[in-house]
Length: 490
Image 1 (spheres, rainbow, N blue to C red):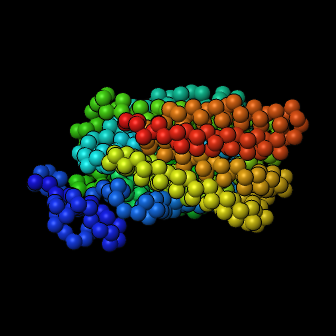
Image 2: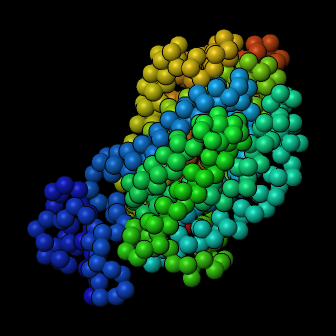
Image 3: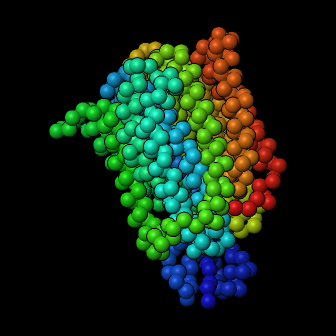
């Protein structure tokens, strides 16, 4: 016999199924699974197919938003320490990070693919299948990471040169990237498996994992970069080493969540043997999502070349902006994750209307939050930006792009949430094609034409970003409203 008491939020009346199967007057706050089989009596993966959509969206988004804010705070403090290392240290790390993101784009969709499959299985009440999908996602990480390490180690300086890195930036950028690549398994396992855990409806677990990882990074970065105490000053190499150690700490914390039985998901080591049928289901979402991420990542590499062509001061200013952008977009990333999880579980439970309500709510909140937070960032820019770089030219460039971000950031908030909702529904290919078209057919040509052909310089690049983000948002909204995702299968 198996009785399932689903979570119904805060005093809502139970469903007819619950009356019949449990005979309770009210449903308890937490999931409770009682079974005579092998599944333990425990609080497990959260059921998001009942109760208030608004409460679920906000409840899912909040821990992830805090988690991303921790990363963002790390980025701002990181920018501060890089300013102490040297005026071009942040630019070197930014270029190395941009190339790393391009290289790991083929595996970036694994998080979305694993999340989509796990959330579907949880929504359908198939806990054991969700555990199995978790293990197969990790197996895919192991299979993909090795060739990416080799490619990056062999071609890092050449690729950075093609991105327009100057002689002053290239050496430090390559050194940073090579250390990061040696720790690539930890760097990519942590975000991928965190996405899978969120798919089970437990973002608070990933928040704890991230806290452990970021505390380690906070402690190690200045020690290794600036040479505090008995340690030598390693500069950008110290930053890379601190990041790898912090990510390894996060993976160890994930093991504490996934290896014991009875958690939100249980990772069974015997399930790591490749199962191509399940891997294909993950890759059905992951590959289009990876292509969607490769598109902006590769576009960003070319974009960095355009920016670098305007001089090191503009490049340094743009590097400052990227750190502030990460901080501002933290809440939005929480809403992206919440939308994907809500979409997956409610489609698994065959509730498309509830799915659409959650996605549009998250997208609207994303746009509103972006506008508010970019407004705050602009208000604080005169105080904050000089702390990150003392070069007046870099400060001026950073403040300029931040003003334009008030516009393109709003549309970014909208399309990123809807794109994740489409991926969670299994319609990742359409989201990828819209993103590719917006970036490559609209944004990059607009940036080049306005900055070079029209002679507007950096102003033309920021205007091109606005045009591209509007196109992306319009395309995602059109596709989601069309509703084809309702018939998709993962």
